[in-house]
Length: 309
Image (tube, rainbow, N blue to C red; front, side, top):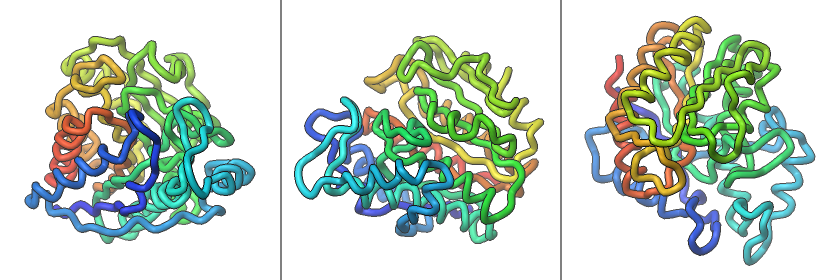
């Protein structure tokens, strides 16, 4: 099965500065690995820009304006110690969010069953009125809101398997019963959110696991809480915040996953989508800071997205 891939060269122009883990080499290694793996059957598209109105479904209009209007003409400007604006950030951020909107349109229009958005900056830490954690706009939340507002969906499920909790995605949807947000993440770890007793309006399922968790224990945690909740929700669209920083080689965390674990969880999401959502999955790149491990994990993830029927 073909997987639609959305990316754009603008993503490489977001300059985070020397030594920053969220660097352009992450996406460069991914794209090279995809070029070197032709059997993935990817149909490639350029990620379009999101409009300010589309972004404002997930963020305040003031936040959108503050980010885009502060983009410097030269040099870099900090939002916080981890999150930096550069001359290329505005275009990259608009296309990162716009890529998810385009992927959502393609999947819900029936032009594709599955799509992957390979863009940066990532998004799941961006709150309605706050950029943080390398993130400016919450790309997957923008896409989910688009599915609700434009396509009229009533149930969208988001699985976030990035090693860090997606505080922004939870904040955006914690009072929105049409969206189920489920996260498995290392704790304690940045940003310090994602507690088990944070349940929103019954639509938030947080599953923190300790550092040193192996693949089998991570899978068991998903099977115990998250997969049953997602199945009971019967989503019409499955979305994935696909962060690969739970990999054993990642420098920013200490979970012990391998490519086989990312294949396994992707298989489970495809099965879920096949049961409830006519197979429809939109996956969005989040973290992953060992570039070589990240590239291998993305290939495994895309292979699993493409083999499902």
